[in-house]
Length: 63
Image 1 (cartoon, rainbow, N blue to C red):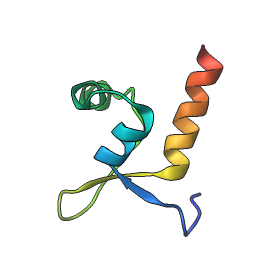
Image 2 (cartoon, helix red, strand yellow):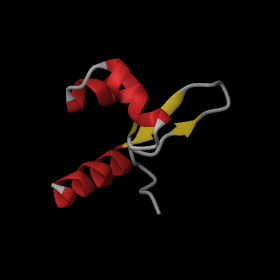
Image 3 (cartoon, rainbow, N blue to C red):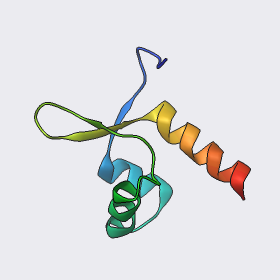
Image 4 (cartoon, rainbow, N blue to C red):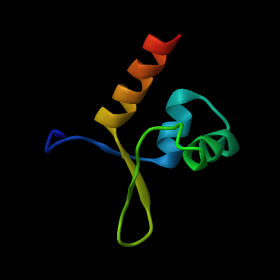
């Protein structure tokens, strides 16, 4: 379950934080290798801060 105050990040915010090119991030999304995202009714995509942290932790464990 997510925290009710879990920050919802935009894709540009996530890209800036993890330091990868936009094309790389979209390729990861297409291959389902990136963090889980939420598509809002208006078409905007958001990624919960907790999900980004979980995903990054899973990469550390796999390294």
